[in-house]
Length: 305
Image (cartoon, rainbow, N blue to C red):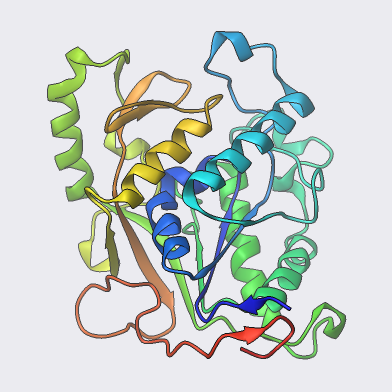
């Protein structure tokens, strides 16, 4: 029988590559420290725009299959072994950008009933029994329909998983102690973009993105309650390698990267979070998402750790 790690982290993301961009250093750190890290990806990103010309022929299901391979490669870089597709491969499709006809396509994640999609995640929560859940803010970070829906599904699933009267066939009820949303303080972003603009003439990108293009931007620094600093560590290198593995979607150049719009962004080795459920681990900004949680002793699979 396998042991259940004493610390368990669950992340819910919309498409392959979102996890590496937003939380790659965090995932690498906790995986290296022996925590259980589970990633649930809600779609395969079948509508993503492809960067490399040699892969430009990929679209639809073929692109989704390729991005699933990229996701597997990225998770190897981060040391993460537990990767799930919400409801199984192909259950929910990429919804495209907000306001496009793709939002209403059959099978698009945006159109899925939230409680129905959440029950697939309830099964994962009750199996994994995470102490920490990480997902997006209510705007999905930047308003993409799949990101907004991932937030809704994650938060609803956390609520439903704690209800012992709901679907006992999905496992014993589990109330996740701490929930975080991914955030980015505006002041931190602006400082990084100032450095980016100085470096831009020597970069292979057309222009710099705007600060407001970043997901989870917040003006109020008090909303950022946790800061995980991987600057100069192996975790930052693992994050860069994981982002590089998502080659159809991301072009990495040193501490910078660009998406298909060819607009440069900083590759952040410091990742920020807002605690929205649970008690902080102490005064000040947390440096450990598990702060304040007493790890249960490791147990064999099927135990109640």
